[in-house]
Amino acid sequence: MADDDEKAQRINELEAKVEALSKEREELQNDVEDLCMANASGTVAEQAKAAQQAQQRKWRAEVEAVRRERDDLSQRLVLEKTRHKQVEHRWQEQRARADKAELDVKLYATKASAALNDCSELMAEAEALRERAGELEA
Image (cartoon, rainbow, N blue to C red):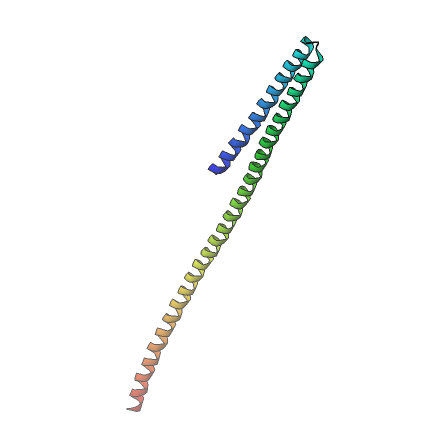
């Protein structure tokens, strides 16, 4: 479960990073727009716009990488939880089988003990009959 907590924490960190990058992008975009307004020159505005677009492409790539990592971690977390449930289910099945086997052993031991007692009684009865037969022969 520690891995689940770590993955969930990493997902939260990545989401916070995406939010921070988006905010930074907005601030820089506003700065670029302010620069473009301040400079009437088309060349400065074009350079600023090109720089802004390059920066936006970079941010989009970073945001996409963070989202992919978040999605991957989310998927791995789901798989781990599923595996954990499967293992737990198998363990419960094995425990139930072991409990049933233990009960079966106790039942068979009880039956064997009863059969042994019956056998002992029959042996004693056979011995008594042999003695009586010996007496009748004599």
